[in-house]
Structure formats: C-alpha cells, structure tokens
Length: 443
Image 1 (cartoon, rainbow, N blue to C red):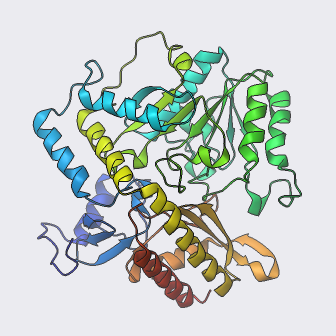
Image 2: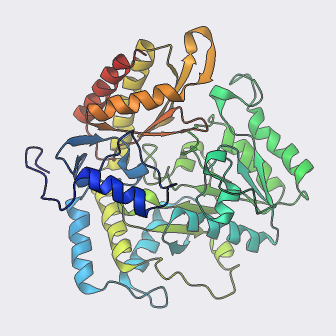
Image 3: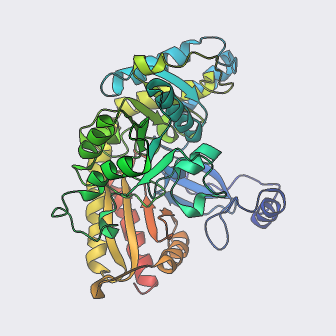
C-alpha cells in the first residue's frame, strides 16, 4: 500500500458508516475507540481508514492476520482457486483440503494426525469437547478461569469471563480450575515458591466437583481474551499429568497461540513440552479467511461413528489460503522472526515499564503475543485494575496511528500482537508511539 496514495472514493462517509452500523447491527457488536475507525484498505503492516489516515497494525485482526494484510502470495493463490472451484462442502474430497490436512499432521506434535475442518474457533472447540467425550465415554470437562472459548452455548459455558457470557452456564459438566495468573495469583502466593499450586489444585477440583473420571482438560497455552495470561513453565506438565491420571485427555486450544505466534515453535503447547491428544486452531491459519481445524490422534478421531458434515468447513478457497499462508510462514522463517522480533518487542515494553512504573504493573507473554497490564499504582503496591488508563491510552495510540488490542477480566490489559512479518523498524516505531501515548496520559 502506497502510504501517500489517496483513499479510494467512497459512497459513504465515516459518519454514515458509523450510523448504519448503529442502526443495523446488534448493539453488542461493539467497536474500539470513542469514535470508531472505518477501515477500508490494508497492505502488509499498514491499514488505512475511509478518510485516508494510516495506521500501524499491532493487533492483526485479533491475532488473525499472520503474514500481513493482503499478502501477495496468499491473495494470488486465492484468486486462482476462485476461478477453479469455489465451494462443494465436505461431501466431496478436494485437493486443497487433503494437502492442508497432511501438512497439519506433519507440523503438529506427538500422534496428532486426523483433522476436522470448520469455520471458526468456536466450532473447533465444540468439536474437540465432543471428541474427548466420545473417546473417553465420559462427559465432564475441566477448563480454566479467565479462559475464552467462543460464542456458542457450549463455548460460553467453557468461558470463565463474565463479560463474554450472555447467559448462565448451560452445560453443568464443565468445571473451572484456577487460572495460572501469577500477577494476580488466586491463592495469594508468589512464583516459584508457590510450587505451582494452581496446577496442583486441579486434582482437588476433580475429586470434589466431578465423578472422579473426566473426559478432558481444555486450556489455552496463553489465555488470550483473559489478557495474555502466561503460565509458569512447569504448569502444563503438572496439570496435564493430573488430567491423565483421572482418565482425561488434553485439548490444547491454539486458536490464538498457534502458527508461530509464541515464537520459535509452531504451537504454544510446545513451549511447555507437552503433547495434546486433541488440538484446536483458527485465526492465523489462513491470514483472515474463515477456517478452523480440530486435529486428534487416530484413535480419538475413530470415536465419532455418527454422520457429520461441515458445510463451510474446508471450503476450497479458505483451505487454499491456509496452504499459501503456511508456505509463506516456512519460506520466510516467520517462527524465527516471531522469536527475534518478540524479544525486541518485549525489551521495548519492559523499557516502558521501567519508565512508567506506576501505571504498568506487568509485562508478559511469548513471541509476538505480549500483554501489558495497567494498575492504579504499582509503585505503592496498589494493583487495582486500571481500565481507565487503558481506554485513555487507546485514544492516544489511535491519534498516533497505532492499532493495539485489549483484554483481561477488567479490560485493563493491552494485547499487542502484530503480524508475524513485522520487522525491527516497525517494532521500534510501535514502541515509540506507545511511549508518546503513555506520556500524553500522564502515566
């Protein structure tokens, strides 16, 4: 995208679009900023709004634009596929779907091999839970507090985040374990002297709130919507060991952490040295095209004996986008870039933490998945969540042409996750804009 080229002619103004959004979309379809952005163009790391203003994207469509906006290689593959075959459903095998399934089997850990394709992370998590229940013959699932699994009835029951639950829990077979949230330890302990008690507590949870025989454990290696909560290195080895002791399988929810996002490895669970029996993925898989997958061991996949279909799962165009996205990731060593630029980003954020120690309470994450938690006054030991600082910072970063995300139970955590194609100069640019923004809010 040429940063100096004028915006394309538009039939509607930004105000018109905002007004129509308010009139015709669910009110719950909320937007960022006091005056929302109407984005119309994107290329690489940059986006442009309807008025021609340019933004450096450090949120990547919620960790979805993995190889840059409108990537030439991905777009070329998609355009060619559109002219060949657009849609047939899973009733017919296609070349793109078997190519992607084989590729995912080759890059996922352990004995994972058999794929089921759907169109969203919600559907992938639903499929994973069903497969765990079918395989074990049990129904109870352990999930994590502060976790997020999507917007269906089951996914909302798995989600332990009141802001994202429109209805009370409808699936009683889900039990929520303590989150490995070291900065706000639910047990009031300090790592590492805590002995990772949050993981050990899963055993008591199973003994006291379940039948003692569970179907599985669904967890994000880093909790995304929860505010990029990053467990201690020992957490998953302890937690998954307990789950398997009581007959369950481990479902690694890689919707946000997958495809090199955490740096150096394909998958977040690999950072913890554990191999799941089931894995879910979406978002970064196809650079913005709607696609998700659930991959299982062959024995688990064989557990589904009834008929099943996913009308849009494995759509030839979306799957072609995924194949092209993975090819770009490998050719450009984007896992390595995620590791390198993630270290640079982390160093810059920790520098800001030293510069603004009152407001920035915690910096955490892996690779290009970094969180910054805002509090009332860390220098005085006051860790009261400071959502107001986050809201004010958002307005300042918007003014300076930087897009970031937010999350956390209290809305006080920055989620910083640029496309994996980001370079050193762009990381430095983002840190500079954040620095100016913190200074502007008097952090």
